Length: 384
Length: 122
Image (tube, rainbow over all chains, first blue to last red; front, side, top):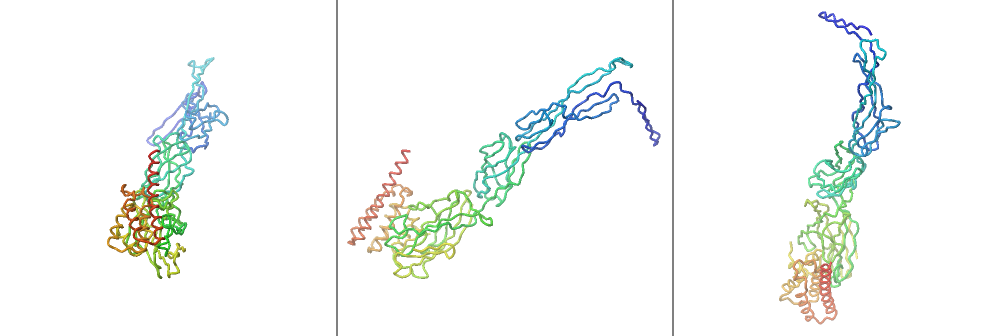
């Protein structure tokens, strides 16, 4: 009880306020919960708190923490749970999505029962229930991507592992920056199986991958590497055995020279280069034959030579067979030479040059019958 | 780019088999035998030339299933050519090689027919 006088000399204005003596204790007015919203990753925890507001007869407010006295609940426990026992108000994220976190507290309202005082029972109590609420948003989080790489101009099936993706896809999306489209094969809160369709004009190299749900966008530190066919490495060189019919090399009637089977692996642009493990590349060649005639054709398949195929195997390998020349006369030094320019064609029909080389075959002198040598001057050499 | 007749002509004339030739011949089947008759027309047959013809025919029938023109999967002209070559020589070893090629092209054709019938039954 008392009087507050405010004096403001400017232009002579003044005000005063008389504080009454309150007959009843402060009354429970409302309950609020904080934080109003919080971005969780699955398995994270964060404490929520409830605060009760009390008002006295003069309209002044006081606030009291009621976290341990409130009753706590979540309306979506598959997404987030909240402790209703000590420590009360502790929210735990479970899976992707949104949950409303509520606290309920029973307070007391005091109402003066007789006016003017004094009264024997000056105040009547009422016990209203107020509820406050906040939201727990469980965000998506990517922990791994497999495979980490894929061919430009082709489709790669990718598994994205993590948490918080949501039980079903709904409007959620995967993104990997530019020039990629996605076909979703399956979706769960912890795993997404999606086809990455990489356009021919997609930038090569790293693409940051994210998952976006109604709760937000995930971390972006996981990358998918777009591979461009850049080179071939030689895995094996095998001399084809003599014989009259495929898959043999030189027949007895043309037994000067040599024919070989070369197994290549397509590699990408990185340093050091990585294999491009894709079964969808078509190896192609142009050049001039040992006879000097130009040629332009796919490298395979060659009838009668089972290692020869039209496209690469799933590990990115292919065979060039038979390579070489057989003749019924000696092949004098410096030998016969052919040129070869190998390219790789992706499913989007883009062509990438991967190797240029020349082969020289020699079988000098009549003593070379049944013999021959072939070399490209670097990583391919064989003799029989 | 060399067509099939140029490839076969070069093989017979130079006695040379390039790896690339097998790709050209492999899709021809009996059409290769027809081309051989054109190339050999009016020419004398030497052992070397006959041996190159055998190489042409064996590679053209390496996998008849891959021959696009279905009638060319059957070695009809090929058997006629082989019979003619056999009658053209008295070389016993050469006759053995001709017989080998005859058996080879017939076996390859029969194998391709059986595999096709097996695919149908599936």
